[in-house]
Structures are given as structure tokens and as C-alpha cells.
Image (tube, rainbow, N blue to C red; front, side, top):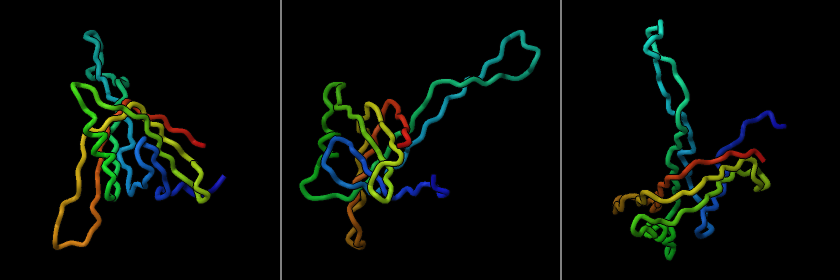
Length: 143
């Protein structure tokens, strides 16, 4: 076992589209809603707190834009009459040998937002696609 924490810059995303790298993945978080309750005959003048429903944040993927690669846009446009293509996504943190050391398995995800960085003639930057997805939870596995 290493005495050092894991580094976050070497990762792979399998999302059901083309095999391309991502520059950033953010939003891997979960929290419990808090339910506050007080019984009417309680002698305490305060509430008790209980765990409520689990709530997952949306996940954001960023990558450089490439010619003839419209996979994000195609997935976003798969919406029709209340139906959209849902995908399971795997995000793996990799070690120096490119092997997974930690894996997030995201369930039933679908895109809710697609944005591109601004076009600006005064800057020399890469055009970045930003895809935001919602999902129905994830599991974390140490490998």
C-alpha cells in the first residue's frame, strides 16, 4: 500500500461514444437530504434530524472539439417525445501502468446541456465542448 494519495490527472471515460480523451470530469458528488422532525408532545424545543433521499450532482465532461466528431450533439438530439437515449458510463482513475485503481459506474445517464466555449478572434485557444449529464446514481469501486 502506498503512502501517497491518488493523483487525479490520469483517467479514462467509457461513455458509449467515440474513444476520445476528456480534459476534465467534474460533479462526482452525492449527499443526503436532511429531514427535520419534531413530535408535538416533545419536551425539547428543537427538531431531530434524519437522513432523507440521496441526491447526486450532475456530471460535467469537457473535451476538445474535433472535426467530424459530433457524438455529444447526436446524443443530445436523441430526445423525442419524452424519451432519450440513456447510457451507463464508467469513469476510471488510472495508475502509471494505465490500469484502473478507482472506478465510478454511473447509471442511466442522459445529456441535459451541451455548450461550446466562445468563439473569439482575439484569442488562440482550443474549442472546448462541455456536456452536462444527469443520472440515477453511481457506485465507487476500489480496484
